[in-house]
Image (cartoon, rainbow, N blue to C red; front, side, top):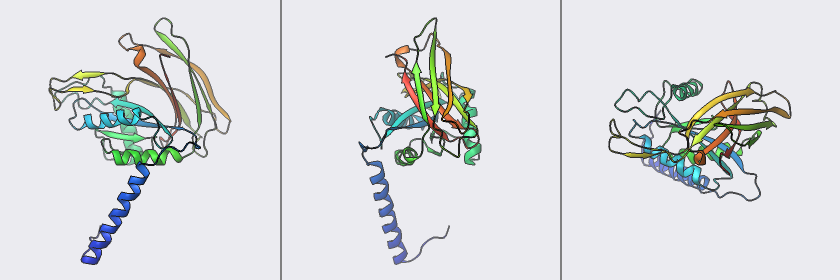
Length: 269
């Protein structure tokens, strides 16, 4: 990259920077439009309790998920705790190699040399350092404007430690519908840890929507209005607090990892 020289160039840079800042500010502060449909946007955060730069990103995720409406977006938060920090002083009780693999899959698609924390991924289309509120709001603003599949998610009564959900997917956006996968997640809010070792030693860390389970439940039928429908049983761990659980269903294109549509419902009424 070439550097500008001279007073005129400096002035040009200042003007351009001011315009860019104002443009981003307008985008971030854009109110929800009452005449536009509310659209779900999946915001994933790859994080770890062993990472000292992760708590601000988790606070941002909780803030975004707690807002009523952001640019007509219904934020669906997925906080995924990776396990590659577990050997560096503190084992994250919510970590899993499955979330690490999911992050590595994203790294391959985005062309990253490796993985890092905290990393935020919006609708499988944009990635950035997870504590950047400006990048998060900008990516959400872009994601909410794109075409979305219609995902319907219904909760069935719980019995014998199991829940049952019904998922229906319609109107897949073209052309990203050839090999779309249907995923089902369970998230839990209200979780926290008193960390005694590692980079966050002495901290009481509070989390957003921690992913407790995530599995692929099927694939969509391309070029059909009714692309997928089915019921799924979900095994509930006794340590999970039912009043804090939420089911999340989303459709993700296998090759690009773009999330085409999503829905969520609380476990408890």
